[in-house]
Length: 105
Image 1: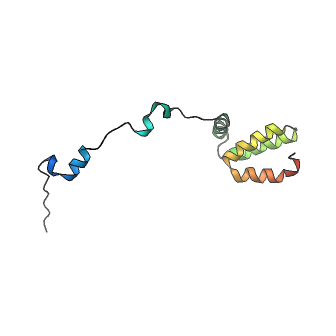
Image 2: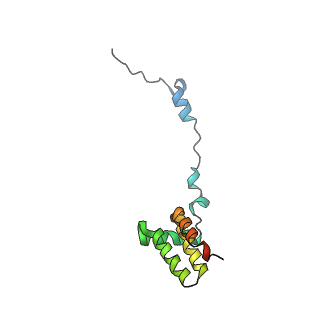
Image 3: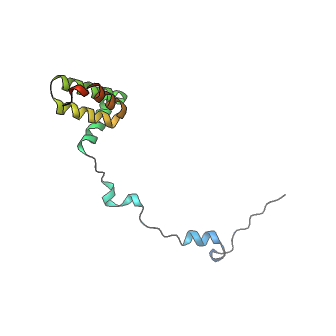
């Protein structure tokens, strides 16, 4: 069986050409000037830099820093590192907090 191609004679008689020709072409949603500047908070930026430095071991390294800060008595610094770990590995941060519940005042 032979298949013959028959192109539309004009734009007016082609349903597909009419649909494609009438499409409104606006500004894509991701090209708005306000959307081009991403809002990243300080902890997210620090977490990304920490990940760039430590790679896949970044969560473990953050918990090591949290442990060191806790041993030094700096609870605020320890919480900072646990929050950073939480962004990288939530379960590891939860395990760390559970293992140190007695020290949290």
